Length: 346
Image (cartoon, rainbow, N blue to C red; front, side, top):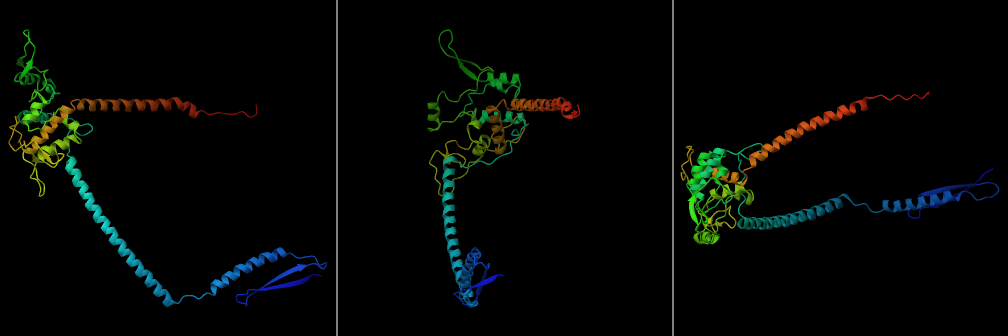
């Protein structure tokens, strides 16, 4: 009842593979399902392309070995050339970076190391014995050139000296006051409310005496300089002979921590330069530490009070936070733990 029509197609590339398409039609001669034939024709096209790729000449083992050696030789050569380029770039970059570092050190000075100051902790306080020794170093060594115009004698009371000691210390200084009834200025003994005396009447006189250099005021020096405490300590202990190739003009002294490397202030601290009242050995490092502690206190005399207020605030805030947490749980506990019953019947 069914007649079969056999359609044969061959792949022209080899002639050996054949694909047979069987299409059926009924006795009335109606056309079969040629859409299946179209799909198989597409399959024939893909098989033809794959057959061409398979019939291509495959490389032998020797060809593969030769090609691998060539690639390896090219790879090694490229890697060596790239390594030479990177090495040259690294050397030139290191030389340029070292030049920039030296230029930056020459312009801004050598970065000081970090020292463990006893008052730098969160709850740490000043060493008041060190402050008293530092004030002694300032009086006997630094006060001849540097002023501290923002510090009064009475500020030392309760910090390093008693009130009686402060009054005696202030009375040893003569302070210009006036005018009097005759319109003239006069000298009087100092009072605790007076500020530390200035070594020079004005800036011009200071520059004239120091060869054009102006000694800065030390009241806020540890705050006015970057990393002030470490900078001041490194500066006053960092004097040394200039290295080879570095020349310092006459009247200046080499100090790598000072911007430019040449400073007009000579080395002032030497072992035994000050005789401490409490018998502490007056080494160079000890005097530098004490005077930096004194200058740090002068720049921040309120530091201890500020830290104490901060600690009290944190304690009060912690207690208030605990109370708020407890109140929140007490307020919301009945609401979160209540049971809601829904009567679906009524």
